Image (cartoon, rainbow, N blue to C red; front, side):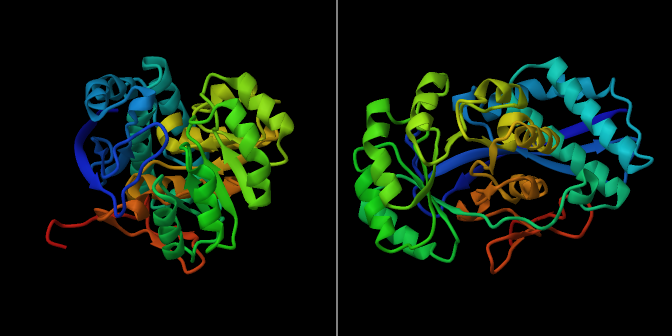
Length: 356
């Protein structure tokens, strides 16, 4: 089949400065939105998003450079949307074709994979979760707060107190003071994410304090390649250690068995909604706790992620909530902080007009 692609880079502004241990840009980000059409299904357009993270070697420019190669890989894929079984098989063949055509480049693959799923679901007149065979009953999302002065983090935590859990970015000299300030105003579960920013001695020193403060989990305390350090801390920790930067695709899971208690799956890392579903299912088979995360993306990336959120134990799908302006409508956060999956075909999203 012949596909045509249009893509654009969106400049995103955060509601609040957002800093993590390995990135200092606090105010803005860039994401890539794609629109996919097919001559065989001319009445529909699929929308997708890929959030490029320089940590994984991607920028909007690298994504634009590899899109033609990925698009060319689709030409050799046989698509059959006659029923759900054949449709799902077709989409899996497309994801496999992307991987054969190009290694890595998860955000570029993600953008096209989401768009292809959105297009197929629209063609079948099904919401995305029905195409995937997942449940619309989702765990609630937490809310993430970036690194800042402890009093500033606590003030933002107070504003986000409606969420059942908070995810606090750490990786600096004031980590303990920050958590003390948050715990003073927030009684619920706290999840901490050091984004590779700790040394083993620091992790060991902080561990009893994290237990005392009621922290629920520790995400990626050490560098991605230091599986020995992750295993060392997990052996000593009553809290689950969650691999994020160490768990990029499904191929990383087997080597993490016996190293950490859980993994963080993100569409922009693993290549889209189909690969994320398979990664979550494989992680469950291997006995991992499953954390479904996101980048600082629009409702497109969050809606696609939410379609597989029922497969996760914990959900961190707040990317679009961090933005000053989300350019898409159609995804609703319930009063219980659970995303309400649209019942309309595909992702169920509409792009705002510039004056809206």
